[in-house]
Length: 398
Image 1 (cartoon, rainbow, N blue to C red):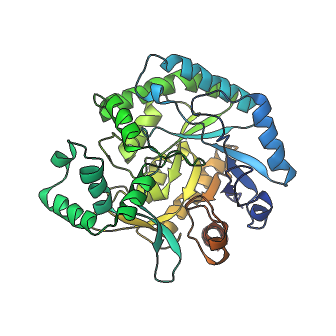
Image 2 (cartoon, helix red, strand yellow; image 1 turned 60 degrees about the horizontal axis):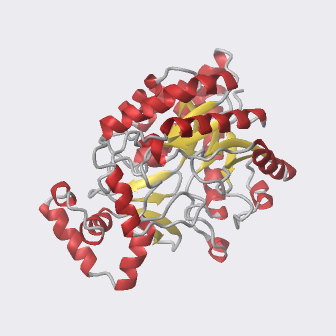
Image 3 (cartoon, helix red, strand yellow; image 1 turned 180 degrees about the vertical axis):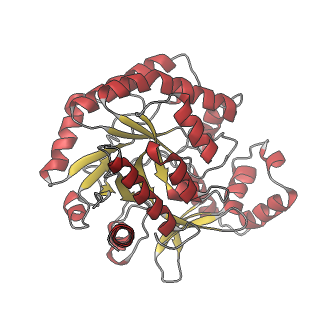
C-alpha cells in the first residue's frame, strides 16, 4: 500500500487562538509554521527555530513545512540590497537545515500576499467563507486607490459596475473594503495605508511580468545550489488570485509559469507548492493535468476549492465542491505517489494541508486568522482524508 499523504495543519504560533492541542484532535500529525515575528528578509537564528520546533514537538506534533520564509521586496525589484538579502535567506536555510527542517514554502507575489474583498461571505447554511469580488476590487482600484492606469485596464462596463458597487457602500464599508485589500502578510495584523501602498506601487512602475520573472530566476539561481546541498526542498506558492491586480505583475499563475519556475534552476530542490485554490481561480488552468505533467516537482499540497463566477469573482467553496474536480486532482496525486514509490523516492508521503476552511459552529467564538478556523479546516481534512482512502483502495485493492 502507498503511504498516506502527511496530514498537516497551518499554525500561526503561540498567539494563534487555534492551539496545538486542538490541532492534535483533528488527526493532523504535522504543523505548517513560520516565525512571523521576524521581519521579512531578516535572518532566522538557529535558536529561534529550535525554540519553535521544541514547542511543536512538546505537543506531540512535527514541524513538517516552513510556510513561509518571506522574501524581501528588494529581491523582487532587484534593488541595491538584493544580494545582501539573498545571503540572509541562505543563512536562514542553513539554520533550518541544522534544525532538521527540509521543506520551505515561499511566494513571489509583489507587495501583497493573498487578496480577498470579503472575509465574512455568508453561504446558504450561514457558514462564513472568504470571497474575491471582482466589482469590489475594481471599485477600490478605480475610485479609492485612484490608480490612473486602471481606467485603461477595465472596460467601460466594468467601470460602470464598479461605480454602482461603490455607490452602494457606506463610509464604514468603504473603510472595511480598503483594510481587507490592504492587509499585509498572513500571521500579521499589518495593514497598508493608501499612501504607503502607492509608495510600493511606485517601485514596480518599470517592472512587468517579464522583469519580475527574471528577478525570480536570479533569486532561484542564487539559493537553489545551497538548498540542494542542505537537502532543502523549496516550493513556490502560486499567486492568489492568479492574475494581475492593482497594477502589480504576477508570475506564478499558470502552468507555463510553473514550468518556467522549475526550468529557471533545474534541481530536485526547486519545486512547487500545488495549491488547488490559487490555481483553481484561473479557469484556464487544468488542475488534474498540472499534477500529471509537473507532479515530480510538487513538494507540498494545499487542497481547497473555489467556486468561480462569470465576472472573475470567486469564493471559497467546500473542499470537495466547487469549480475544481477534487476527485480527479487527488487521483492524480496518488498516481504521482505510486510513481515515486516505484522509483525509490523517499518523499512519497507528500505534506498536505486543508487550506482555507469555512467558519462553522464554535469557530465563531474565536478570533482566528481569516480562513484558518479550526472546525472548518477539520471538516476539510476529514473529507480529503476519506477521498484519499477511497481512491487508494479502488486503485490498488480491487
